[in-house]
Length: 123
Image: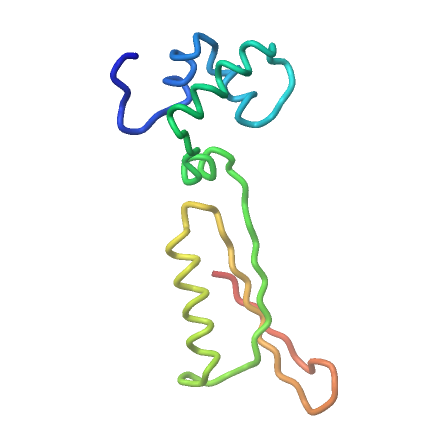
């Protein structure tokens, strides 16, 4: 085998299995349209290389958008919920490349009733 790059890409697998990049993609995603012999060659190469898809690259390529909605009680700075809210905002910033939007709905309630007011913020 030729020397492989540190990060194995679909095109490297295709070259080793002597198939197209599209064939490797179809095998990786369990799609039809691949001959049994090609599927076996690709799967064998994947196994030999202990190939693990790059989830970060996949997420960026998929261009999917995610919306998380969280309901929190209306609170003052320093309350328990402040840390929860900061943790959620921090996670959204950390994973910003994954197209995540966070909407926090702040709820105030009076005893034993449905929410009397709701206010939402998007981050």
